[in-house]
Length: 133
Image (cartoon, rainbow, N blue to C red; front, side, top):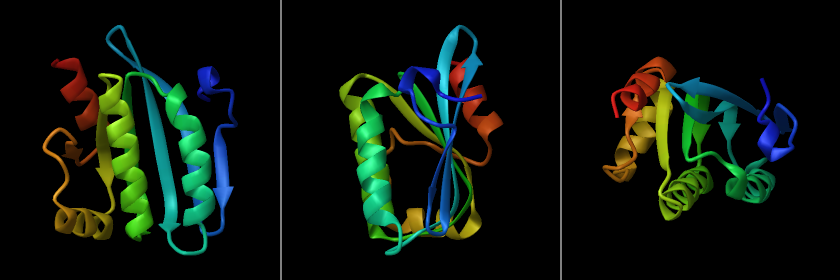
């Protein structure tokens, strides 16, 4: 399923990275799920940053980032994550990480993410958190 309200393809391709966009429903709430596959590194971070920022304004109130297949991220990838988080917060939205690769989890643990940005083991765990709100 694509994110039709953003008018973008279901997938963006970068060197060493694919980003997939989908929508889902939790209760009566429409949510976006963005899945990252590969690595965010010096080869792709500039283009990724530019394209992701162009899409941020169209995200639903709730977005889940799936990092299950994100094997690595550099500091620009972390900056992109914080940018998405702050944009969602500005519009009283919510961002969750639902699913995370073990190495990416280690990187994010070093960064000390905001408490309002939960890191959950799976997308289903993230949906359960949303359903219980």
